[in-house]
Amino acid sequence: MPSEGRSRYNDKQAITLITVHARNIENERNQAQCVFHGYHRSFGGISKSSKSGLVAVGWASWVVKDVGEDLMGWVPRKEKSFHILDNIREDNYNIVYRTLDLEKKKIVALKKITFNNLAGITFRPGLKSTEPQIADFGLAYYYDPAQVWQFTNRVVTLWYLSPELLLGASSCDSARDLWTTGCILVELYEGLLANDLVIYLHDNFFHGPIPNEIGQVFRLQYLYLKYNNFEGGFPANLSYCVDIRNISLFHNDLKGKLPTEFASWPRLNLFNLGSNHFTGSIPPSIGNVSTLRLLSLSSNNLAGAIPLEVAHLTKLGYLDLSTNNLSGRVPLCLYNVSSLSVVGLNSNELEDTLPADLGFNLPKLQEFYIGDNRISGPLPASIINASNLAIFVIDHNNITGPIPMNLGSLSNLQVLNLGNNPLGDSQRSNDLTFFSSLVNCTYLYELILYKNGLRGELPNSIVNLSTSIEKLYLFTNDIYGGIPREIGKLVNLTVLQLDDNLLTGTIPASIGDLTKLGNLYLSGNKISGAIPPSIGNVTQLIVLHLEDNMLQGSIPTGLFNISSLQELSVTNRRLGGVIPEQIVGLSSHCVFLYLDQNLFTGRLPSNIGSFKHLVALDISYNKFRG
Image (tube, rainbow, N blue to C red; front, top):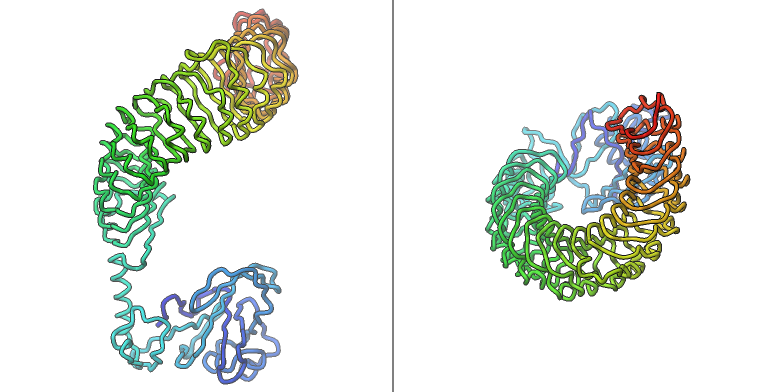
């Protein structure tokens, strides 16, 4: 019967390589290394009836003696015909290498098995094979109910041995193997197979309830079932797994109440039940897990207040309670958990103000999300002291200004979202100088300041923002002045929204340097002059809104060559000329086309009917004929 971890050698097996180290066996080929390889078969020069011929070509005599008949026609490979690249795995029995077969020019696995004493190993008599491609004799032996085998009691491992063998017996039969099998099955059932048992079933399509029997895996430490379709409630018996460290059930279809037996998990580090359908409140008992470092309950249907006990989690580094129905005040003591680096409270119904010392009390803060709540009061000036801050999102609240002038001290800042807050109400009139400070934020890629009531002239320093800036939202404010001529320096912009302001002047020609721009909104201003022909260089443009300005002249022909354009709106009252046949260049993707309330003349291009995806076409209030 094969020993644990070995493969039985039979007619149909086809595994590639194995190397056998034979040491001091019959005093021949001391420390010889032979490779069995099924693709290297030769019938020339070998007598199929001569065992001496097998020895002559390289087979060890002890191998020929036991299985010589099965080796007829096979030539052993030497280790030097393989180039070892790296070590894949190593244990007490063998070493597995990733190697290059120098003859076949292929990457193959090479296993070396070391036997210090092969006495007592027997191979199955009369074993036949057709095209064997592995021979792993290992520590396996065959079972014959009519014969009791005598073996050495010097074994590789003492685990799972029957009492007779532990006391020195050398005979082995099926009863001894049955003992071993029973030991393994019992440990599998009781969950004692390993000291650090891990269950990784994430990123699959498992469904149905999580079996309560999982609570019988007493030594379970890591449970990852995220990204599946498990249903039902939280497995109640999991409280019996007192050694558990990480529980991740993220993104399933679980529902019901959250567990309350948090005291049962004194070593818990990670608890992630986000993106499920749990209801009820957050149990205060969660504060009993002093070891907790990550807590995520986001995107559920939880209600009620955030319990004060959450602030007892003094090692907590990641907290995400976003996208629930939580209400009431944010516990002030939560802002004193100095270990916090990520705080996610957005998309709830939370109230209260942000503490004035926010930036001082959270020195490790990297990401802060509290948008889409009912937070009021001033924006804490101390935020500039959170030197590790990378993402700051407080949009859709009632937070007032002023905006700190030295935001540039946040050298790691990547995303600043202050949108839809009345910050301008407390901002000094005509003071947008904080933009100049943001020039020092070299990692900034998203700046969101829409619907803030900001008043003042758009500073030229905006073009000196980091070239990493990708998204710039300044719409629906009271910003005046012109678009800086060097706006094209922001070469990585994908979204530029300056609509619904008081901008004047012309669209600068450098707009054509923004070749990555996908969305451009300049509507609702007082911009005049012509649409620059360089806009045709923005070949990745998807949305272009220029309506409600004072633009004149014709639409540049190059604009119609931007095949990616899906929305084009130029309602202006002053654009004119003939719509050229080149408009067909928009036909592959265009969904909304608004040319109304202008001075366009001539006939509507005949190929307008080729627009495959067009949903809305407005050409009213023009001078088309025909």
